[in-house]
Length: 173
Image (tube, rainbow, N blue to C red; front, side, top):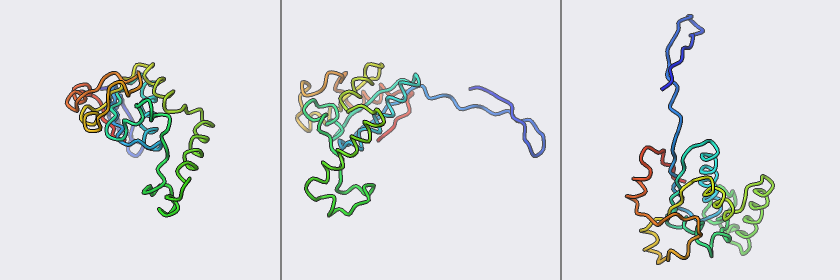
């Protein structure tokens, strides 16, 4: 831990303080499969790698949709039961609302140069991030290993995830 000295402006006294240790490793859990639930974890993993921080992403439950080849390009914005949409549930449930919100969000992300999910996962993996699928969920949903995109390093148990996360900050999105 780095020590540094500061001077108290009120009484002129010197104080020794410790700077917090920098984060060296993060493990991010992505458990939901809607577009607005997957991107925060991917953005955080990408940001970690850009800062030289080790990153592990663990996909579980509906978050697996983000790494399943047939589903990852079709993620949608959830317009029903999403209070952050600021629209009544009845309106959100109208046909076409999810497609409209998804198109709008994708257009805004494109303006910010945020890549589509498949490309983003490829980029993050290419920087050295590890990507895992939850074995219990894979078994429960009867998903085959061949269903996943090639960036998935392995299907692991929660116990194995904890082993890989030793010393990491665990972030649940």
